[in-house]
Length: 322
Image 1 (cartoon, one colour):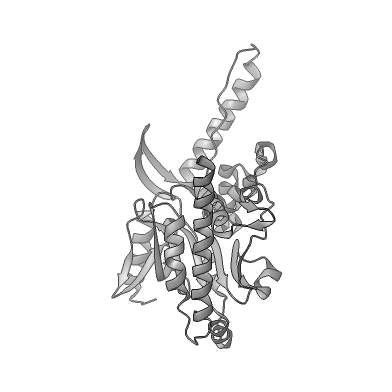
Image 2 (image 1 turned 180 degrees about the horizontal axis):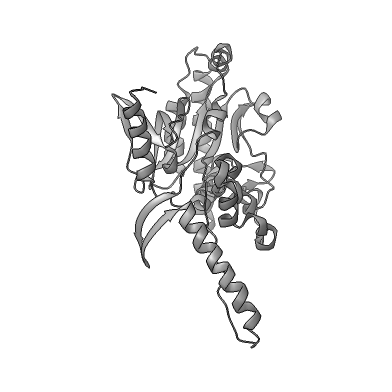
């Protein structure tokens, strides 16, 4: 009986996939895609309820940069409730965003290609930077989070550790190593839902690519065989070289130089594929794989109030509108 229930649960995701394919085939005939309307309930169904899945929004950061329109944004409203509104248009801070989805069909992609833009959709996401600048109370007390203070404390703790390590000769002697930061610059998981997949695959641009081929839903993850340790590094310590003078401090806080030493996991996303014979249950596999990545991101970086206030004040005081 238990095996029958498991089989029916798996079959339910196959049925959902067949319905999804039929909807996407109809949408493909339209010059103006409604793919985000089709994909939104799918993602709402497979991500935890702590996340909102909002369509047609923009992502913003405290450096006064913003993305192109995002078809679907998966974001944590509980930890970062600051959604900036301009009429019905929503701007979501990058610190809250755990996933972004670009939805398109063949016709809508041709229209995008005709538009002259200085950056691609994905580049407009990748340029956004989270900021470590918060003042919060945690279980151990008040924590002032900023790069300079964290770095100063880390260096002091490291120097103390090195001095004590030489004096610790007893077998049971334990010395606490300086604590690195589990996140320094987060980025969202990037997902492409399309019927024009070949061009994107050549560049391995997106984390997850979903497409309809030969009447079936196909899922491709270019880095599916990578260790979850590698995924953790690219999601929680993303491109620290973008931070200019702070990059050395951030790399030190992240423990990047010791990444090989700390690398222990052999887990991969590939191991989370659900198979029946040689066929993959795509949506059920996607649920496990996407939620594994969301668990790596977990709760967002604490919201940097002061950084966003600074951005608003700089614009207001200069009399500029950006």
